[in-house]
Image (cartoon, rainbow, N blue to C red):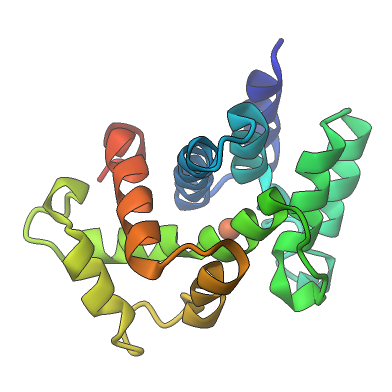
Length: 185
Ligand SMILES: [Fe+2]
């Protein structure tokens, strides 16, 4: 079994919520595209995206433990250390400082997938194919829209990775459109 298959098995075991599974798939493909952009290991980056919220449902009542339970599970399962470290540092509430490019990318970039889903859902046919970068940027500026999406963290991509919001939106939209069928959007 390769690591992606093992990851999908763990997701089936620990996650019931279909929207959370879709968020993980979206983040997986976004991270794959970002790895390509930075000439980094696509499989490693994709795995970090795919598994980053593995313990979300188990830590619902104890959010301070997110993602520490996932870190425990993934360590036991033998996932690569760099994947585990990126996951450990992705929850900004933990106050850990992302250091490697992979850690920074996961930290800043995963939240934008939630914004893009929200934008798709207000399009006439609720499809990702109807979404444009311009529309994402406009909705980004509207604080009352998809309020749960932390804009401040997303904007850190510029200082941490030199990645402008517009380019991040473009990469994320493309990554999500590629798997629109799996995302049901
Ligand atoms: Fe997430």
